[in-house]
Image 1: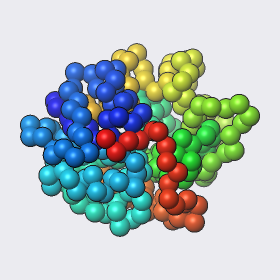
Image 2: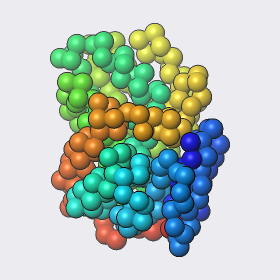
Image 3: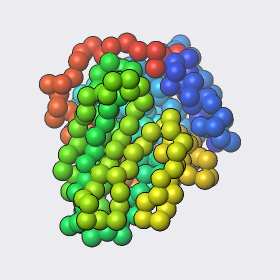
Image 4: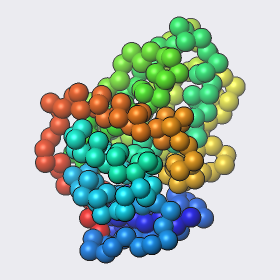
Length: 261
């Protein structure tokens, strides 16, 4: 399939252009002053967060969209973006990790009352704002697990440890269960064993598909029954996120992670 890409010159845009992330799909960069070309199956928006709404409004209404997180800068922007097309998927990368999906499947075999899940995040924020950078991941993971009927007793941030430069998401469960603490660290290829299954900590299993590639393969076929593609799930995530609005820093600290072009 052919996807347009807004923000191709930024670091995040460059990741979408990496063959390991787009696979057999074709990525067509769209310049700041260029019209959205015809013949696309969808558009990826990887520009700075404060430009997402304006970029989405350049896309023909109804065209499927993948929008980097945070989806918008407030709930009004989120609502307008979600209304632009029937298929609008925020890039909550961890939800698309094969490792997380396998962990979630193992968790489904455990009695809900035996599981007490913590989600903690640490490491620096390239955006200079942990709520806007980490928050969407935190809320998306928590929402996905709550849909299974589990209680998420803690979902927050830890101060970065000295010398820590990688992002980490830790999901803990009670010691009474067979599911062990699980770390996602996309820069670490070590393996651990949980419930007899080996998971790679860099976000994929032996199929070698990255979370971004999983998104491209599945975001248009997931539909409302999949919490990763359900617009109601996205609305819950950002409603919860912006309940912490006092933590936001405006304007967003400029970062080389995103680009307008």
